[in-house]
Amino acid sequence: MLTRLVLATLALALAGSSGSLAQDLPELKETPTLSRTHPDGLPPLAERIPADPLIVDLPEEGRDTGIPGGDIETLIGRAKDVRLINVWGYARLVGYTSELDLVPDILADVQVEDGASFTLFLREGHKWSDGTPFTSEDFRYYWEDVISNKELTPSGPPPFMLVNGTPPIFEVIDDTTVRYTWPEPNPQFLPTLAQSAPPFIYRPAHYLKQFHKAYGDPDAIQSAVEEEKVRNWAQLHNQQDEMYDATNPDLPSLQPWVPSKLGTDRRAIMIRNPFYHRIDSTGQQLPYVDRVVMNVSEGSLIAAKTQAGEVDLQARGLGFSDITVLKRGEESEGYKTRLWPIAKANQITIYPNLTLNDPVLRKLFRDVRFRRALSLAIDRDAINRVLFFGLAKPSNNAVLDASPLFKEEYQTVWAQFDLEQAGALLDEVGLTERRSDGVRILEDGRPLELIIETSGESSEEIDALELIKDTWAEIGVGMFIRPSQRDILRNRAFAGELQMLVWSGFDNGIPTPEMAPHQRVPLDTTFYVGPAWGAYVMSKGESGLQIDYEPVQKLYQAYQDWLLAEDGEAMAAKWHEILRIHAEEQLTIGTVAGVRQPVVVKDRLKNVPEKGVYGWDPGAQFGIYRMDEFFFDQSE
Image (cartoon, rainbow, N blue to C red; front, side, top):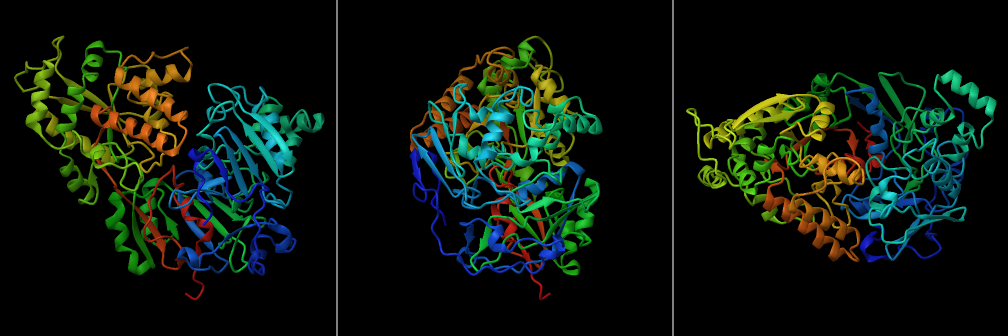
C-alpha cells in the first residue's frame, strides 16, 4: 500500500524527491487475448508499460490474481451513460482506495509544500492508449492552450484551480515533472483530481493540436469545421476534446478501457487499453477483462433484464424495490444480489428554501423551531419499515458511520418521533390558530399548507412524502406534493418560487477531513437550503442574495476557515462545526440513511467485493474497488 496522501501534512514526499519509484519488475506476461481487441499487433508489453508501472499485489490485498479475457456485459439507461466507463475505470492522477486513502495512481509521486505548491511526477515511459508518450507537454497544453484560451474556455480556470480568485503559477520542470504553485494553500486540488468525474488537467496534445488554430493546418481545420457543421475552430476543438464523455474513439485515453468503433449507439463496446500503466505482481497487465459492453435499455426494463441473466455486473438502474425480483433469478441465472450501503448522507431529504420570495413563509422557514417541529413529526422508523424492510437507519442528513467524522448525535438530534414536542414548538412560534380541519393558520390568515416539489423520478420519495404527510397533519401542517422536472425544479428554486424540495441527501456521506465540505455550504445554486445565497457567492455578488441568516453565515465562515486550515486536525474541527450547525439547525430534514443498493454480480465474475459502499464521490461507484482487477473464472 502506498503512503497516504494527507493534504494537511503540508509537506509530502511519498517516494523520494526524484519522483521515481525504484522497484523490481516481475517477469512480464503478455495478455493471451490481446488479439481480440488489437488484431493488427502491438509492441511487446515491456515497451507498452511505463518503466515504473503501478504494481498491485492482489493476494496481499485479499484478492485473487486474475485470468485475462472475457467481456463484462452491463446495461445503461441512456446512450450518454457510456461516460460511466471513465467513472468505473477510475484511472486518476491520484485516487482513493477503498479505505479512502488518497494515493498516486497515474502519477508516480506527488510532493506538496506548505499546502500551496504541488509537484507532480509522471511515470517514465507512460503512454497514451495510441502509444504516444504521456509527458509534461500534455499538462502544458491543457493549461496554456485550452483552459487559458478565451475562445476555448471563456470562463477561465475552474474554481478548484483558483485560490481567492488567483490561478497558480504553472511550471514545466522536465518531460515528466510539472508544478503548480498558489500564493496560499489549495486543499481542494488533489481531492478534486480524484473525483468520479475528474477535471482532466492534462490533454493528449499530440491529437488535439490538429484542431487548434495555433498549431493545426488552417485549411484542414476549416474543412473539418464545415464537415462537422460547427461554427468555428473552437467549437470543433471542444467537440473533439471530451475526455469524460467517451464518445470519441479517436481521442487517446489513459483509462483501462477506451471507446471503440465496433459498437452502435445502442451497444457501446469499450476495449482494453494496451498501454495501461498497471500490472499485477505476477507480471500481467491490467485490466484483466478484454471488453466492457454497455447495452442501452429502457430504465423500466433493467431489473427484468438483469433477473433474466443478461448482465454480468449491474447496479445502475436498480433500486431497493427491485431486490425481491432480483433474488428470484439468482439460482437459475447464476448470479448473486449483493446489498451495498449507499454512500449518500441520506436517502430522502426535505430542503426548505430559506430564500423563498414569500415573506411570510420565508420568516417561518427561518425559525429553527419550525424546522425542528417538522423533523420531530416524521416517523422515520415507519419509513424505514414500510419502504426499506427495516434495513436502513433513521437519520438526519449527516454523515455515515464509515466516515471518520461520524458522531451519532449528528444523525439523531431532533430526529426522534415526538408529535407532542413538535406541536409545542409550533405553538411557541405563534401558530396557535387552526382551521376546522386542524390545519394551523399563518399570520396572514392563509392555511399552513406546504408545497413540496419532487422530480417525480423516485417512487420512494413520493411514498415517503405520503407517510410524512399523515404525521404532519397530526400537528396541523398540510402538505401538497407537486411532481416536476429536474431543470424546472432548479430554476424555480433559484427564482425563489419553490417552497420545499425533496431530493436525496448530500452525495458524500463518508467524507474525510481533507475532502471539501462544499455541498453543505452556499457556494452555488445547488445549495437548496438557499439557492439565492449560493448564486450570490458564485457570482461574486452580481446576482442572488447576500447571506443574511446567521447560521448560514457561520457555515460559510467555517468553510473559509477550512480552506486555510493548516493540518488535518484543524480541517476536522471545521468539518465538525459545519456538521453540528446542520444537525442543530435542521437546515435540511433527513429521513433514513444507509439504504442498500442492489449490485448484481455473475458468479463467474471475481474480485468484486462482497461488501462495499456504493457512492459517487468518493467512490466512483465501482471505481475505488478497481474494476480493472475484476476477472472471469474461466474454469466455469
